[in-house]
Image (tube, rainbow over all chains, first blue to last red; front, side, top):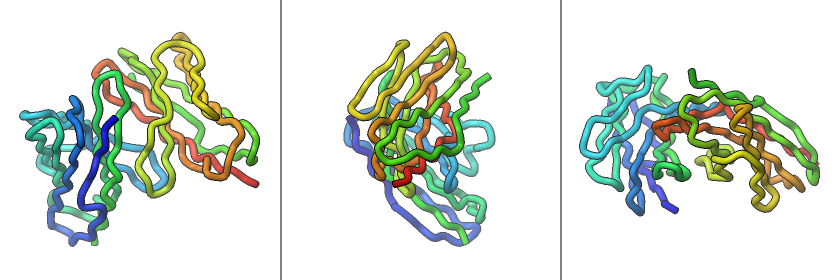
Length: 113
Length: 109
């Protein structure tokens, strides 16, 4: 199993600023993902974080808005850039290996005013 | 294409049994997950089915039929703490999860 931590757990940010969310896994995982979840809705995959290379983004998400880093197998960051109120959401990091479950971090609750 | 469907909401009585269905269309299918998510918390793993059949784990069981593109989660002896959203997610050929919208389960005394 893997334990995933995220920080910050929550933040309130002003429009136009940027926030970087950190995700740390306590063991090496081959795959790490970033999701967004609106209240009462399911998870929307933002991107797959690839170690040492550019992340793979899903339709509707771009690197300029959501730059992602993954310098090693246990750590990744997601930046929400030039924020607007529409970016208010819960951002979840997950990690796992092929054929195994994905473990989730506790999430970062972001409010943009 | 990729598609996954599950009911939006279900209601059941404490002590009873409930079955939450999930249908999927996933290219390069590599299995199906069920997760439980309480409000304000991250999803937690319940089950992972790759082969056809029923897998039982305590009060929870999960079934998969690959030929029918169908799975269900069966919850027995329901407790109030089982009130949560239940998310099914299929695994595609790249081992990415394709998530259903989730089923909100309401347990009544």
